[in-house]
Image 1: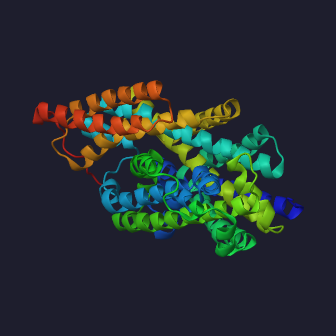
Image 2: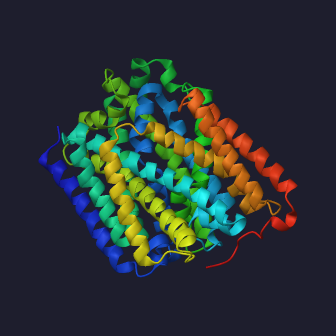
Image 3: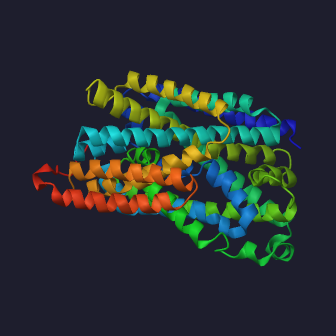
Length: 465
């Protein structure tokens, strides 16, 4: 039962988010401030914002649901996210921090030309928009189950707050809110919900006695599912605009590298915690019809007044940080790469243009969230296209000097067509589109690049801001 104290805690959380937006408004005085926090973040803020941005609704509510259905093997989705962040930090972050760009598409444009910039911008902006939409809908789910508010009202209230602080201060506002959300998530999940849920379920021994052995088998979710998570989330996290935009905020290459390692390790622990909470929920409330409700139900079952409000705020923190990241990523791509880079030919967007596009995309996110209830299919399309069509050209741009613009462009077009065709043929949730898409992308990219004159390949973009 949600008490007045819980409502007060959640209300204070929202008040702090609005105050962070005002603080960011005062700090954001240039496009560099607005889009990448002036490239000045130190280790603490960097680890907090990077962790918060990748641990959203799927990582929190979704992982608890996977734990409810599959036991501890439900951790693999977030494990792959964590491993992707570690790989990003150790393998790519040094190069990325030296580029001096704002977006994935800007880097591809410098390396491969304007057409590659435009096509990649459309794919990445769509992916980021759907990330924001799914996170905003997840906010409605939390409020509906626990607070009794209709999803539409919850989306307008919580989603409106996300849009407001994102428009006001851009990355500075989002950095501060992400760090605060990181702190709330850490306390709410690790120090409150996890120990209390496991204790109420009788500890690990009690859970083992209550549940079948499969709930404690690390691979019971299935090797096929684990491998699909690897392809989608390990690779997808390494090239997502919302993630790269955080890397660009680091004040130095060492901050980006070691901060990425720390954030990735945090994600691994977070995934295990969520799966254990879901397993405990299965022992406590075994008759749930909808697994996605496991987080909210176990929270109301085991937490006292005040702590329940804190844990609900933690769930909202996880979802809101991802929503704001997707919102800013999509608006940055549209303002910087589509409007300023291609249409107006200004090169880069200024502060005013960035704010206008953030507002427009924010309104679109709220409208789509209100109109669409099931966006899993659209999100799957976005992730399949992002990873299947862009991963190989992006890695080639950073590491293979022989890569050419023709190779990248043909690879994007052909692999996108293959991914879409396979999803239409075999269904949106089939595994083969991502497998075949990445293989096609690699073969076409290498083949066309080798057949193209070496003079067509540009120098690797590496210029300090």
